[in-house]
Amino acid sequence: MSASWEVSARQLERLAFRRRRDRRRMTIALVSTVVVLVGAWLLITSAPGWDRVRETYFDWDDAKAAFPDIAKAFVTNIKAFLVAEVLILALALLVAIIRVVPSAWMAPLKVLATIYTDVFRGTPTLLVVLLVGFGIPALGLQGAPTSLFWLGVIALTLSYGAYVAEVIRAGILSVHPSQWASGRSLGLSYGKTLRHVVLPQALRRVTPPLLNDFVSLQKDTALLSVIGLVEALRQAQIFSSRDFVFTPYVVAAAFFIVATIPLARFTDWLSLRAARRQSGAA
Image (cartoon, rainbow, N blue to C red; front, side):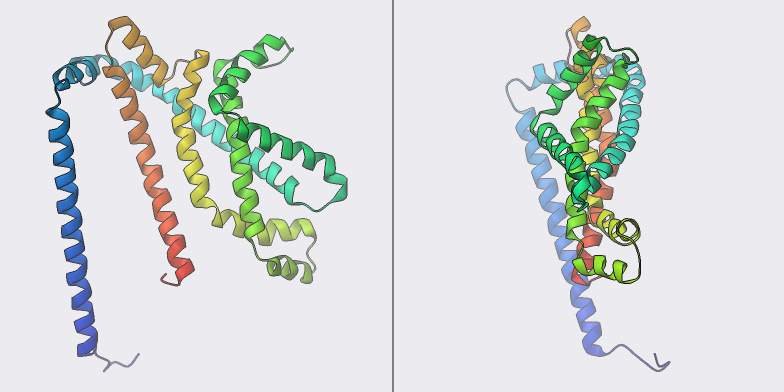
């Protein structure tokens, strides 16, 4: 670029127009958001039963009393989420690779992988938690887990592994065939082409939907309460049953919301960046 280069008057005019347009959009968005939120607040607080709802669900003293125990129990949700996430990724990657490898001797494994994804994608996660949580201990198998935590993690892994496997498989199939051909033309084996050429591209493409699945997983750790695991929701149920109040449920919901928002915003940022890359804007 020449040192004497200067922005033209037309370009300055364009930039000024874009700044005015962005300010106008932000102002409209801010005003409309405030109007909607204030309207919703007035509508809710003017309802005939608002005083009763506030006393039942939003009692400050009840919230302070329940907060420490629910916070302690929420650590169990975080642990279950982190452990299950690692296991889900490993299981899903294995299932996805089995389903895309064009090898005749892997036909039995392909059938098993297909049955697994069909069955667990068609079964509600709550039912999987109940079946695993009560079914595995009932079998009485030696060495089978009896810990409610690990039974819950197994159930979440089986359920979410099927969804995530299909997401990864879709990512692998979305890679253009020329990438496979390029890898093989360089002398790479099928496995090395998959590992070094195709899989990195596939995982990068499906990162936003994978993170969306993990946002759902973070919330579904609350389902483990149905088998008796004392996590945030179960702890809130204990308070509610004992004191006949519902504020602890709101406290538990607040923990899930606070934990979910950063991951959700990160997912939005990745999706926006991927869209810009595809359009050539970034």
